Image 1 (spheres, helix red, strand yellow):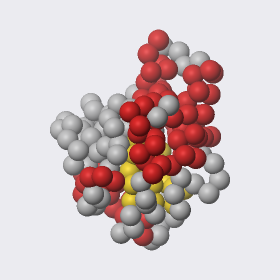
Image 2 (tube, rainbow, N blue to C red):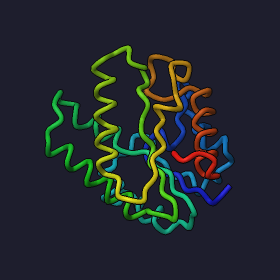
Image 3 (tube, rainbow, N blue to C red):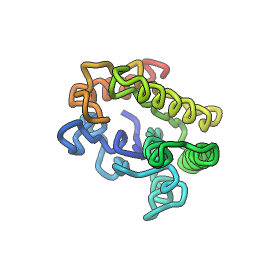
Length: 186
């Protein structure tokens, strides 16, 4: 497989539902530790502000492909008071775009989130859909999308955790491998 860099939040740092370990999809693909730079709980705002030098490190890491998952925790923070304001949404989109532009590699792939509750909670399903719209809004031309809604289903979540189960990570690994190898256009 090409040299793949993975950055972003808990979906990038491979948190497995119920386990919290870092043995998810990129671990399963054998991506080296130094290329697995996701940080659970991190936000696009933190990455854009180069918190702990994360953005600089990622930008300076040689890679053919960068895969990232971000904006979920920004959404949680914006909704903490029950209302996501237009300013919070615009700031999140701007931060994500800055991160994408800064870490851009010959191929850049941005993940869209699957609804971890698979439609069982309509408010969470709508929130997840709106989050994905915000992510797509942030993506500049030439950047690919890996839509995890087409990869993950009810069998890949435990109904409690927002992260995929081991089976979910196996499905993500297969989709990422196909996308990176060019077998499927995400």
